[in-house]
Amino acid sequence: VWIDAGTQIFFAYAIGLGALTALGGYNRFNNNCYKDAIILALINSGTSFFAGFVVFSILGFMATEQGVHISKVAESGPDLAFIAYPQAITLMPVALLWAALFFFMLLLLGLDSQFVGVDVFITGLLDLLPASYYIRFQREISVVLCCTLCFVIDLSVVTDGGMYVFQLFDYYSASATTLLWQAFWECAVIAWVYRADRFMDDVACMIGYRACPWMKWCRSFFTMLVCM
Image 1: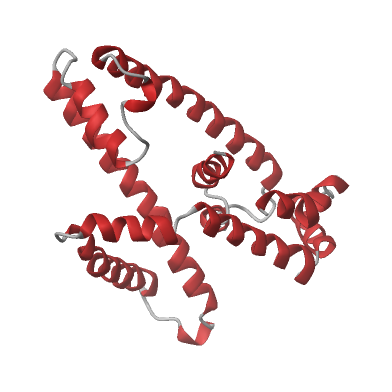
Image 2: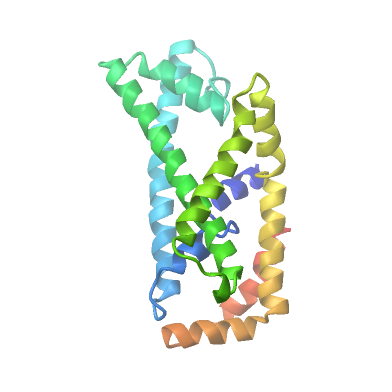
């Protein structure tokens, strides 16, 4: 249960996935990253708390209608989004409108996640290229090539055995163990290879002051212990 909860936090905050690093690259050099981190955590936690009321109110209603325990209504994942919720929507007034809005919301949730995912890959790739390799519209061309490659790979998900391919990706590439170890090694590289003091000096140069010492200990020890 704790591993699943940790995985959900990783996905909710995009921790260890490069999204925050890529998006942070668009900020001003002197932008206060610590302030942004606190604001992001508060907004995300508030949104998740509110979403919990929405999800479990629907599940509780379905459990009452079916006369079963709430844990028997649906598991998390595809069953919740494509079975339990559509069943609940059919019992609401103007069901067709609510069904259209619900699946349009799912479409937007998937698209905005892909925007960030592609940007992470493209930003990291272009940052590795030397300036001598610069060509006009190279970012636009890179995005088209990346999206085309992802489209070709993802065609396997819409085949007859696509659900098994999806579960394979979900279990191995986005599993709790993979994310936790990825975050562990990221912290290890920053704290022990790049050095935590050097990293804090870099941040201090950006925001104008040095963070509290406990930030160093979190990066060097506490976060790595939690990931383990």
